[in-house]
Length: 279
Image 1 (cartoon, rainbow, N blue to C red):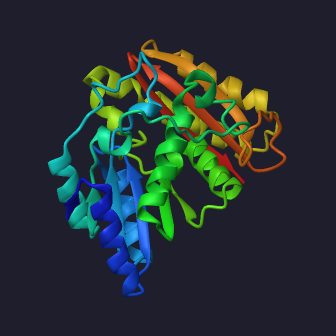
Image 2 (cartoon, rainbow, N blue to C red):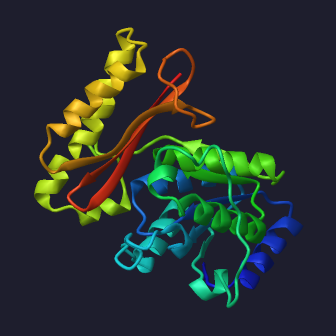
């Protein structure tokens, strides 16, 4: 069922709750792919009913970013959601989520200072605001997010903890193409040549993993190896390659505790991200 109105979603969830049913939420910006489907599949397994939100959130895009060109295909999204077993696709207009004179925001500090938060300063305020609204609208028992957006996952977990939001945040593994490229809606921007060049991200991830697996504990050595691989690709431009503590997102350059090694790289004009966690 496609629902565009907040009131309609709330009425549907209220009816489910009256039957004692559990509810899962998968927040997305649409143009769904196998990565999103893996989140929906897990939500369907773990909940009685599932809502998938499809909303390209203008608040999390900076002024020079790709809000207008971000890929959209709600009909294909609905087909994928139906096939995966989702019950409702919530697809509101911007005016439904942010009515005239909207002036309230949710923000976090600390976990947003590095990585994407440094290069996209408005991004996480937009993420936290829209996700907190979705939590209040859908009131899910569980909400599902991909590990590819590892900092986003950490930020949402911190927001839920700090604001005592009664939802379990579930992180799900990165889904990759057969050649290793992490699935992303933005992959559609890539030309054939850029698509091949984009494989440098997963190669760098694998190189970092292998170095640590062989016993390297010096974070700088790991990052230098990864950066050298990326810099050897003419179409690639590094935004960041960094090692941080997994939960706090603080810079940490020794592999002596769980760390996140994350990268953001421009392939042509397209910004792609990837990462791995070392436990």
